[in-house]
Length: 89
Image 1: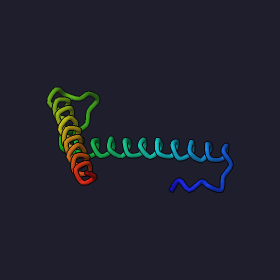
Image 2 (image 1 turned 90 degrees about the horizontal axis):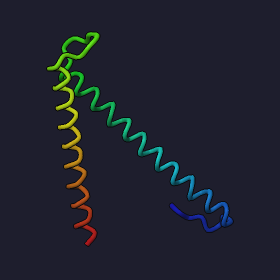
Image 3 (image 1 turned 90 degrees about the vertical axis):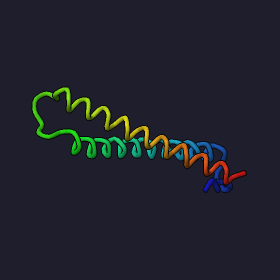
């Protein structure tokens, strides 16, 4: 993918910077998608009828739901990383 042999030095720097910026934007998009996923799942699970304020039960449910979702995502990500690292050896 980094086949910039035909570019000048400054064009290589620009292309590398562009790739870095694209990677950052992709990470931002993935983060936003994850937030929307949390919102959809936890809203449906915890909010019975929206009002002007969240009651204590709803707020606690939302916090717990998001925390479980994050913990599960991190566990799966860490396990996948371990599997990839073991496979690379």
